[in-house]
Structures are given as structure tokens and as C-alpha cells.
Image (cartoon, rainbow, N blue to C red; front, top):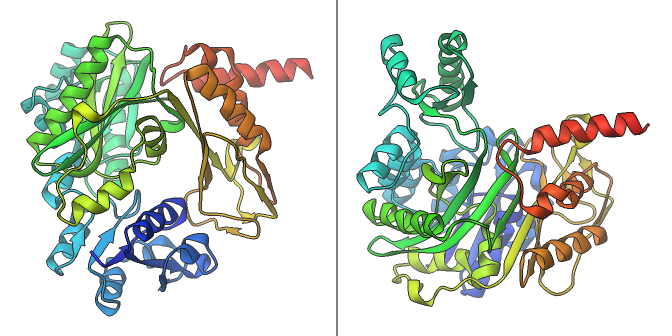
Length: 455
């Protein structure tokens, strides 16, 4: 691997460029007209303009990306996360061009990307799944039979969905038929497939994910992450370390995740996601993400491993350097996402120019970002400005360090979610670990009500 195209932007593109440089690999960035002065362009050794700002005319234009590969002598492509990272057709086109794809095979992407197929693969590998339909549903009698078995509330999910999208929750039978019709229409518009399936909705679940890594022959896990603090099913806080789970459940999730990775011949970094039902003490597979995750830094800090660097080595044909008996977690790490959004205005995006961007520092604090003072925050892309991560010997010390770091963060010119995430971290519930996937939004509503009464 000599020349790597980074088919992405922002902080993950900067992260990949750094990993490539450490291995002596030349990196090629791509950018839209809106990102001409972006940090990921400066971080790479070379940069190529793709086109106008809309992602469809630049970062998602596979023909343009394939042309860059040919014109610039690229021999490998890293897709990062989002955009085309889980697009099996693009991965296949890259491989057909004789270029190395930094990620799992197109067949694994397809198998795990289709939620119905992934569910069947998990069941075949002996991984517990959420009670629900065996496949896509559309016939009213079929729907009725499934609901009688699993009961309400029910989650209707797009088979090709992801990122928390394409999900509708139904509380009672009268809502079921219209919700399925709406979900099918939304799924067709968002993902190009109208297929939906049903699962039992677990209202007080924790969202736990297992970091796995494979080389196509062997796979290992790098422990668990808790991503339960979510707003509209989008992660706000992520952590790794002591997740306050029964040992049997933690071990079961890790071992079953590895079993699934081995079963599909997985190559590269992947994440197997579970719901942990605290009421029943049970865990269920929900999906597998066939890419590096936004929250991978907390795992890197707890395990002392460079996951992106390992992605490059494995893609280049080297055997997996990680061995399960040598992977031991140490301490605790917590990550928060800082977005250019106005929390007081319903998290309205806040594009503009960053006038001040002072990042925290100090021992065991890490900031991943694709912005500096003077950077433009365009309205066309994800609003994340930075990820602030802190490590400590235990959860309380990691939390204290992260709060200290957020106190040093200064961003001016655009409105950010920094104050909001700090208030979440300071809540007694978060400090005590008393949260679940549906905790945050009621907490936000109660906080708003308290503040209005105080005024």
C-alpha cells in the first residue's frame, strides 16, 4: 500500500491521514468547493477537487472518486465512516479497479447492511436476537401473528436502515397498520428499499456495542462501549471501561460478537451492537456496522491500540496483529460530540465561520477535529465540530477530567452543543450511571420545565 485515497472529510479524514503518514503511506484527500480550505485537505499529502458542495455532487459521486483513483495512481481507498463507507457497490467497484478496499468484503457489507439478513446471520451464529419477525413483513396477517407473539410496544425498522434512522415505535394495535405504511414509504425514500421488519421495543434498554477486528480468518474483540445516552437515536455520549454490566452478559456479548465476525469472514474494524434489557437481564443483537465508528477513540484509549493503523495493515495483507489474550482494558474513557447546533432552538444547525477555537489539553485528554479558528462550517454536511475524549483510572476520574477539559473548550462564531453536553455529564443520573436509551429526552424536558419555573 503506497498511495491511499481518503474518501471522506472532516475529523475522520484527518485521523486517517495521520495514520497513513505514520506508516509511510501517501494520502490523497478529496474535497468539495465548500471544503477547499478544510483541515482534512491540509492534513493529506495531495488533494483533489471533486465538485460542488452537495454531497451527491462530490463525496457521494462514485464516478468522480473512481476517476481520482485512476488519475492519481491510488492503490488503496479508506472510506472512513458515513458517506460510502457501507456501500457495497462502491467497495466492489474499487476492488474491480484493482485497488485495495480498506474494509470488509462487499459480500460482508451487504449481508450485515441488510438488517433482516444480518439478523438471520446472527441467529445462525448463535447470537441472541431481539424477538421479532423472521424477515421482512407486509401482509397484515403476518404482522398480527408476530405482534401476538412479542407484544407491544413494537419497533418497525427499515431493513436497509442505519444510524438510528428508519425506525418507528408503535404502542397499540390501532397505530400498527398506518405506521407500517408510513415506515415503508420512508424506507423507500431514504434507503431505496421499502422492506421493514418488526422487533420487540425495549423501552429501558442500554445500547451496548462490541468492537471487533478480523483479518478474514481470525477475529478478536476489544471490549464494550456504552452508547445509551441518545437524542432521537443519535449518540451524544459514549464510554468504554467499567460499564456496570453483569460479567456473564459482558462476556456473552463479546464472545457472540466474535463468533459473528468469524462466521461472515469479517476483515477490518467492525462493531456489533446489542440492546441490554436490564429488566430481564438479557442482551439482543440489533445490527453490525461494517466500518470504523465515530466513537472508536474510547476503545483506543482503554486498550492502547491504534484501530485505524490496524485497518491499514490488515487491508495491506498483513495478518491481524491483535491477540485476544494480549488485549486487556485499562481504566475508563468517555467521549462527547460537540456539534454546531443550537440546543435551545431544538438543535437547529448553526453554520458559519469559527472565529475562536481553543481546544483543551493536559494528560489523557484527546480531541479529534477537522476544524480550526477561521474554518467555515458548511450547511451541507454533518454538524460535528469535534470529539472530546478523556481517560481516567476509573469512571469518576474520567468524568472529572472530561468536565475539566470541556471547561477549557472555547468556540466562538457558531453556536455549539458544548454547554448542553456538559449539563448532561453533570446530571446526577449520568454520574450514577442511571441512564438508558430513552432517558435523555425526558430528562431534557424536565430540565427545560425546571428552568422555566426558576425564571
